[in-house]
Amino acid sequence: MRYIAVLFLGLHVSVQAQDPVFTNAQQSLVALNPSFAGSNGLIRFQSNTRMQWMSLPGSYQTYYNSLDAFIKPMNGGFALAYSRDDQAKGTLVTDRIDLTYAQHFNLLDKKLKIIPSLQVSVFRKTLDRRKVVFGDQIEPRRGFTDPWSSLPTQSKSNVDFSSGLIINYNHFYLGTTVFHFTQPDEGLQGPSKLPLRSSSFISYNFKIGENVLLNPILRYDQQQNFSNIQFNVNALFLKHIMVSTGYRNNNTINAFAGFRHPYFTVSGGYEFALDNASPNSSGTYELAATLTLRTKENRKVVKDFERW
Image 1 (cartoon, one colour):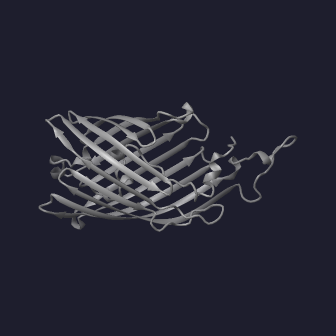
Image 2 (cartoon, rainbow, N blue to C red; image 1 turned 90 degrees about the vertical axis):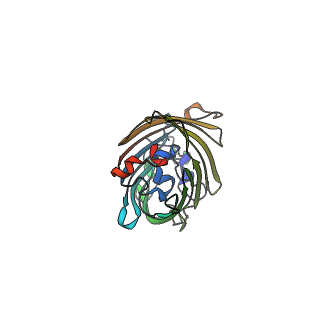
Image 3 (cartoon, rainbow, N blue to C red; image 1 turned 135 degrees about the vertical axis):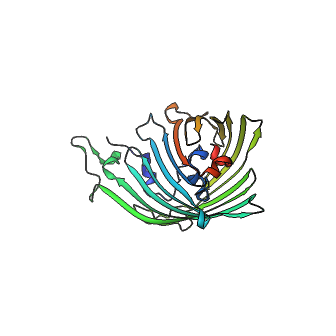
């Protein structure tokens, strides 16, 4: 199937580039901030799927899988992640592998934690030119003409670096990340630097009785001319039932629900733009699953962000 590409704006990738961001941040912790590597005390696997504008042929789908572990002799965490961002069903695809190290510093009798991190990534961007067709490439009698004189697909690989920091005091969390601070050239049709993205969040956990835990989180992302402010309130009932609702600055609301077990969580949700002119392009689905193993000591005292 051929696509008349709104996507062509992404071929130069510089002017309008924007990273995919998961709305359900607690189920994509290393993607939120690489300093979460090793934060559960042993081993954790998280898998996320984001499906945007599924009723359109040029939909966006993002898959993210991360495995992180805490190494006690180093008092640090490692994470290995793979993501795939698919625009317009294979027209423009970005495959990415991230390797992260986070050093955990404990102060004030372990009440204060400062966790800096460094992430190195290798990514490959691939354009399937056969799916990009414009009006001047159509002849009335012969139909589509071959729009490209070179190979039907074009790829480019590069190395990228990011850095994060988390400050945790009791139930309070403050985090910031600078993604792509080396701004590698990712251009497929000429030089084009990957724009730097800054991301920050602030969060606090409130315990209400024995059966209710509330976690409001405020997040801000900035990349080139794009900015995103998101506020969510997450709730955990009876230690197992997870619900969440939130709002973005572009008049978008979201709602999630899930189930938490000591060794796994599953959740799903939907994000909807209230004032979108086209109902076909307003909805986004997210699905997430987490598998986690902890030491006996860490199972007794579950950290705040591990409750989600």
